[in-house]
Length: 199
Image (cartoon, rainbow, N blue to C red; front, side):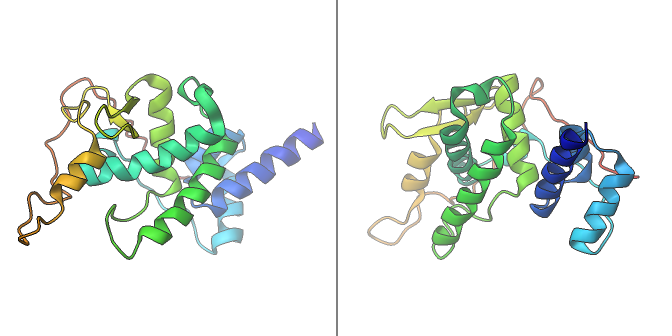
């Protein structure tokens, strides 16, 4: 029992260090909120902040954001395998997200994909892969795999091709803004509004 508790505590510490909300850490580790508050304060020097998790629609709401999420999801699946579409693999999530952040640092100069996803946003993508609300697809044109919302109008659109089309043409005219947002997802898309008011 002591070894099991130690392992759960070490996992909680790793997740909190990466910025995961303590409500999610509690769900994953099984540790009590009071213990997690103490760990958060020792690691970050402050109390955990309340808030809500984002919806899938907000994470995949434009070609730019969809391409961004696809980079993370591809790395997550590379480490977790096909099983990530059945259950969340926490080790693959942490490893994939770490390498994803390294890739985003290299892409930061071009600002092609915008700001990186944090670990909480990555968890939402991982969660919705298990429910079928986020799906892996492969573009028939460029053969690059990407993720799409199951109920989104963007489900059949490759974000990589869309971003290529949005680049300035040779005469200098932009074809389309890279972060052209779509409307809110239609009814049926899951939005997990977990209020993380960490007691």
